[in-house]
Amino acid sequence: MDTRYLEYILVLAETGNMTRASKKLYISQPTLSQFLSKQEQEIGAPLFQRTGGIYTLTPVGELYAEYARRVLSLTDILEKDIKRIATTSQIRIGTSASSALQMLSSILVDFRKYYPNVELLLSDGNLRSMGTAISKGDMDIAFLTANSMDQYKGQCIELKKEEVVLAAPAAHPFCQKTADGTAHVLTSQQLLSAFRNFPFILQHKGSCIRYLVDDFFDEEDFNPIVACSTNNARSICDMVSSNIGIGFIPASYASPCPQITYFTLEPKLFRIHVILYRKDLVLEPPHKYLIELASRYAEENWGFLPNP
Image (cartoon, rainbow, N blue to C red; front, top):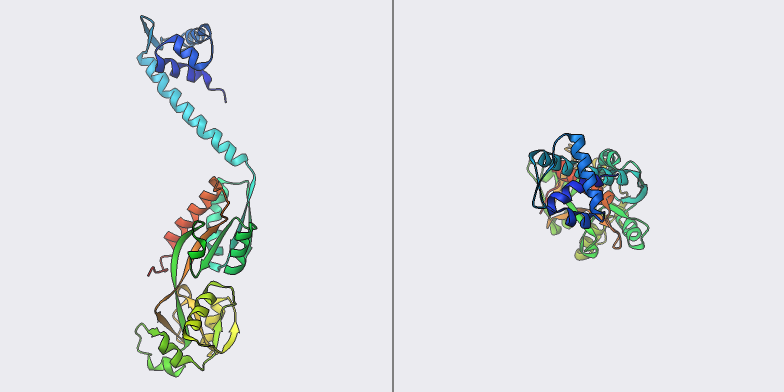
């Protein structure tokens, strides 16, 4: 957009000299002088007071300069927004948890308003598959739940931590002993003593919680009886309530149920909601805005996720 004539006035006001201004603008002095005369004729008032070759803005000139700066600022914003909207690109996004999919469904409304021509390619999987896709460059950004952030240093952003609790059938003898309506804490020794011979309902290998649980079992040198494997936390709760086995679930799924007793583990287990991105990814405005929306959503909507 041609706003150079506004710049003529501003540069002349800045330098206070016709010669210096014309050199800075890369135009001839007569051209600048003719433009100034034409502008003052159209406005009907002088923009500058000339004293000994020094140009000083008049009150009318001050007002002109003020609005010129505003117009130039708005023009710059407009050009950037036009470039942003007109640019078509793709962002490959991966998820490993239903909470991430729910979040994306919510924030994409705002994202699409601001970046209507950015195509989002969504894929889902577990922590292992999404982490592999990121490392190979097959994915740009992934919204994951991880058991640790150590291996992703420099390419991840923590959103929230969520406690992982144990869900056990209320009909189990150990649970009936603790049915006093208070919060229940279970040490690793108590867990294995009470449920050593009871079936477990576990997440599939490669998922975040399965990594946490396998580490727990390895530390205790325990080989559990596995009744079923599923990554669906609600299905785990349904099977627990039917007395099929016990399972580890995110705290956000621990809804009150008379058939289930929930235990906080000691030491506690946490899964970490993270944003993971490619090491070589240059974070452009669309990426940054998507991350900003996700961080805001987690802060406003995931209050149930306790930090240790």
